[in-house]
Image (cartoon, rainbow, N blue to C red; front, side, top):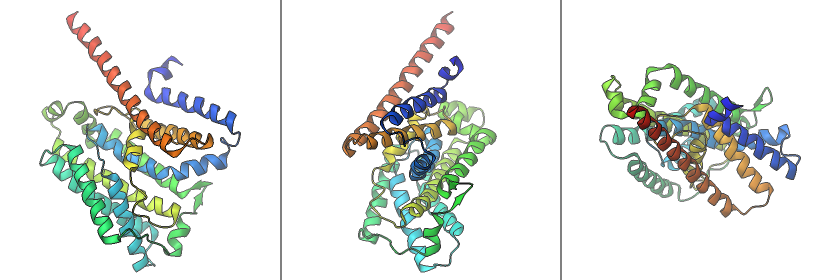
Length: 322
């Protein structure tokens, strides 16, 4: 038990169990397999985006343009699927990845090679994307998608919805990428201290560029996942989704200043946030209170990180004196 309490992931897991127990007392149907699969299927979009956001936050950066990115990617893929209805669904996923990665590359180039602050760059890109989206779409939805695109969203393999399987695929790939590649280790080094990372030989500019490009690509995949669930594309449906994505990552124990965090932690953070939101719905809490709760969760998680860092610095200082 002590080992569990010492890890952020362990604490999050205990919170998931505790909150699930409370919700189950209110609604015994909460812990049924059908309800949980539906819950995780609906949240697979945010979950997949959060895996990508983990990369950016690990470097000490952030990307608030993901809401615009997913909307643009979804619209383009939606229109392409109607123009060429025989396109293979997995080819559409690759197109979504390519569109998202292209947008992410713009962020990465401005952040890494021009040294602009991530928050400034991604806010600017978000505004541009939203403007272009409304100009070209006129706010109109993309409906009547090809049958095979809509049927794709109903696929289950071993009882698991395809959306959850796509999330798991992305999560496993990024976990391996972070743990077993040089660039993955460089991401942690960059988030810990950029100057130190450069001194030991990491090309931090290249790493930043790859991170934002990958993040964008993952958001592009998320756009296809979302469309496969709702069967249409609403250009305004993604407004504010970046706040939920960031909340899930930070709640999962990823240090907002970079250098620490895991894909497992982010996954647990997503599950916890999903359960909290679902619990508030079950308890008939108004939507605006749910949004306030999300903001408070971010503040709470960031505060915990800051406090833990200060305690660690204080202990390190004492050791140096001794």
